[in-house]
Image (cartoon, rainbow, N blue to C red):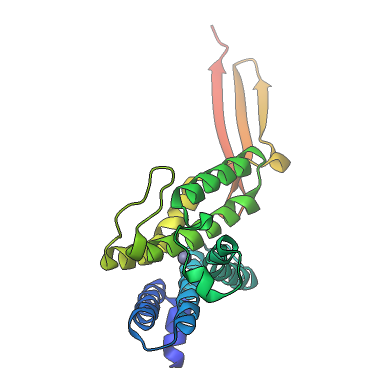
Length: 248
Ligand SMILES: [Zn+2]
């Protein structure tokens, strides 16, 4: 048993397979078990949370510069968000009873995929405008948690793309592949959208010129800092030399 836990903690492939198994078992209990309705709702929500946990665990395995404590916090946070998405059923039903939340005729706002993507895009834009790496990182935790949740729900009612309506329910294999693929796609998207400049480390240009009787030589040096996927700064220097002959 311990080797399974160790494999899931250290291997992205093992963690991805574990996510598939957790999703399958959770769905099996929700759909086919003889448990009372309320208990099945709890298992359904726990499955969403577990998929969120494993999803960000896999994302953090792709990101090299995260401390262990940060990884644990982010993984728990992603699981919490994936689970908390269903709280809007209660808000829409205006009741704390599971029966009321399950009997909603319309879909609740946090289940709208197009709004989630639009809000995430806006948050990424703000992260770039205000050079806020934490907001950039948080946005992708949100995307991994909420999109994974929506994919799972979409096997029953499709993806809700308001104001354009809903897609047809997605096939079960499509949802499984989508959920297992999502945490491997997110790190690339994080890299692609990462912040490229930080105000605290404004780039500098230095020109060093030396003149002799024979020639004029110089060195242009451009210094800046690249931001890693976690917003940490890595020094980065470009140098370009030149030499002009002054002899006639
Ligand atoms: Zn849901």
